[in-house]
Amino acid sequence: MPLVNSKELFEKAYKEGYAIGAFNCNNMEIVQAITEAAKECNSPVILQVSAGARKYAKPIYLRKMVEAAVEDTGLPIVLHLDHGADFEICKDCIDGGFTSVMIDASSKPFEENIALTRKVVEYAHAHKPYVTVEAELGTLAGIEDDVKVEHGAESYTKPEQVEEFVRRTGVDSLAIAIGTSHGAYKFKPEQCTRDPKTGVLCPPPLRFDILEEVSKRLPGFPIVLHGSSSVNQEYVKIINENGGALVDAVGVPEEQLRKASTMAVCKINIDSDLRLAMTAGIREHMVAHPDHFDPRQYIGDGRKYVKDLVKHKITEVLGSSNKI
Ligand SMILES: [Zn+2]
Image (cartoon, rainbow, N blue to C red; front, top):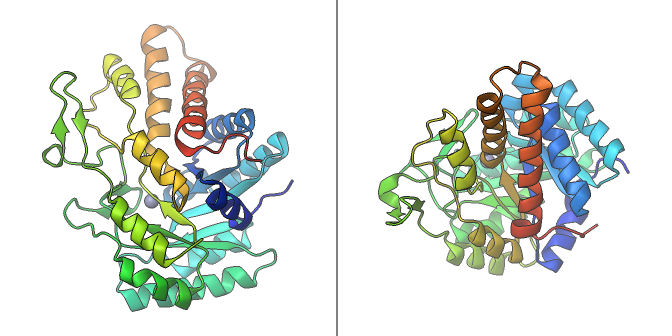
């Protein structure tokens, strides 16, 4: 099976009440970990590439690795551009074989966001085969590669804008801001309550009222959540016990993402959790085996941790196992 776009995957996910994981990939081990996990779970999957990943690994390497994963697993895999900042990067990816792109003009005024999104949609939909387009309304706090929004400067999606935005752009899916954010430090400690027993921070709940209002206004339309790592504390603990220093890293609780997956949310973006799992595996290996110097040994442990994490996300959070 060749790479697929997200259209039919989202239609089925919407109808059956699950979400598809969109995992960021930057190197071979991450691509293998994600797709081997998806294969074992019999789950569709989205591999997404950010501008930072393109810089790090070069677009041609990423595309060829994802093509290898398609051939190796036989899974329906979407190759998606994460946070395309302008028309040119979206065009470059569409011309280069991506099956889905995001144009992120969410920091621009409403009319400019519509105009730029429309331009990308026209180009993507004219492509054969059809390339799907994701856009964003509202802005998330946090840092993801080149995208940086200070805490306090984020803004929730305004539900009263979504129908006009989707109608005028013709976009295929929409990322909304309901309280998730980018990075491993999603919330400031003062936004959270601290569990007195464990000392772990509990973040404020997501704005499900906004999600409900958006889905009422856009029946059957796929919604996307960015910045949806949960910063699983088991990995933070391994990292910190092996020389790391992650203080007050906090993410979105998995049960809230589980709930969103059963609603209109069809795509959930997870990046930081993969980074944490990879780092935990490598740090643990390095400390346990100070005499090792073969990268296959420590990166191999990182890959195993990422694979276990992705299987956990597919089965316990996204609900996408056995959906092929
Ligand atoms: Zn994002």
